[in-house]
Image (cartoon, rainbow, N blue to C red; front, top):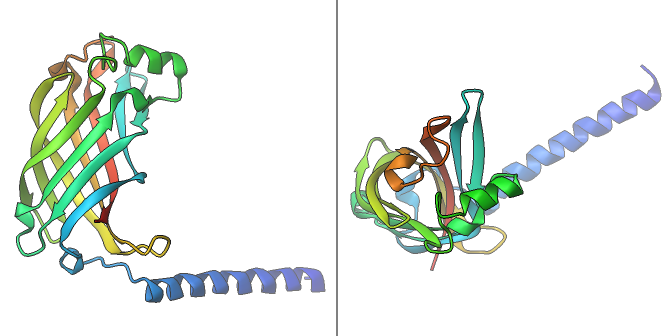
Length: 209
């Protein structure tokens, strides 16, 4: 091994150690709580820059096509003493649908699908929370799309909480998944060639007011 290669190897190793050290130091400066009970109770608002709803649907039996909604609003009432009494609300801008296909996005906004002009928002509002484990819960709620309101179960996992080092604000994050039949909400275009079952994934950070 040449002297130049040795120097590059030493430099890369030093850089790696530096990054590891920075990460460790960061956790000391702004520790992330992995225990939900260490989160600060109170009313939080959804951070729209760190939240997204993605969906997947079977496409002609060949693949699972994915998309997302780019604009969300929401709130969280976090009760640490009685977590089952916490409440969550998510509002989705249906016109913000994004499948990485402009033509398809236009079709999805039309009346036979989301009818975004008439129904500019979809929403999910929790009605009950059932704890499964320390970090997991089933959030029962009502999903409203195109004026159709039906129950939906969201499997939620607590990710972490603490003070965001960028904003200095108390932040808490969750991940959730759910399944639904789109035909239940009058989203029937291209059935049965495009699947009826839709898998939803919610990633959300909430900021304490």
